[in-house]
Length: 175
Ligand code: NI
View 1 (cartoon, rainbow, N blue to C red):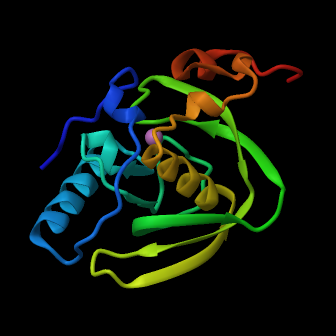
View 2: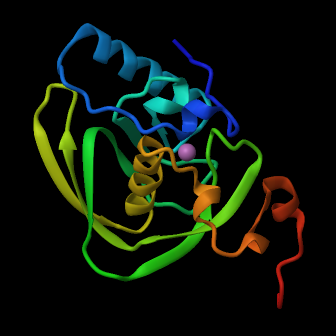
């Protein structure tokens, strides 16, 4: 079922989410089905459970090609539960991000360039991956939702924040 995505200003987006204790349950499967359907319907690159009002440490992400991020390389569809992230270097990257909870806007956000993430799938099987670039960015963005952090809170220069249609229509400087 496609669920309503909460928008910035809703206090539920600012609350820390709780770890999942029971895996392979019908409730968890139903939550993941709803999250996937909602993400695909809205062309999202990822979605966190708190965005649909469920305060659990569950995120999904992945796409073959995404109209919201036309330059991003494909990211495998992933269910990540109770995630832990570790940076693999101090190196950061700046890039544009949007969020289904902040519709119509976009901003330049610093993220770790390379990281390792660990967590469980819906069966409770632990896995880990080392990733970089857009994959690393999506994981950081989605996992931030589990701690009540929305990407505008991470923007360092608010001049690089604005409405997507205005940014797209603006002339490129020095071009
Ligand atoms: Ni988001």
